[in-house]
Image (cartoon, rainbow, N blue to C red; front, side, top):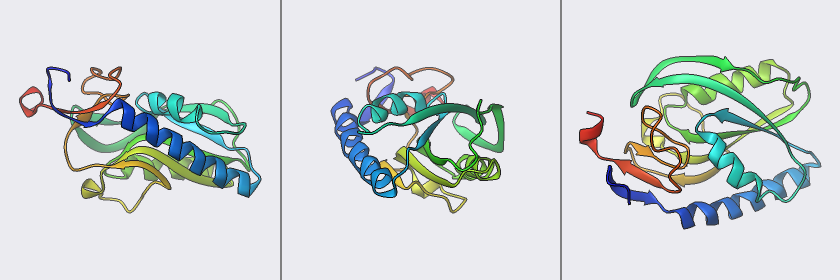
Length: 179
């Protein structure tokens, strides 16, 4: 365990196993629908989850990226804006939005609205983590890796001031490091 963590919340093995399970769920969903999804990763945090999850989806998929900004330190500012947009048309596409965490729901609502306004046929969400106790907007993921308590987590793509992203597990950052 990293010295800056008070605990490991989700191990590397748990992440791997859940990605296998979610990959099957997603494959089954889009196979039944007869559709090839466009996986849209919200950078930077979800890129780690996208990489692991997409290897477990047993069908052709397409991939694109967006970058949204809404956090400063440990708190969402509530002001969600696009830093980098998609580089293709998504008119009549089935989108699987890949998120690292659904927290307040504000970013998710904004991104889903943008994708729908761009003409997506359908927008589903796969999120590695879900923190429902912090939700202020009624948005949720369709495919969820882990429901977690209201703790400040980092690792496997999630960061605190751009640190800890590359750790292969999810840990709880010690409070004295960010309070």
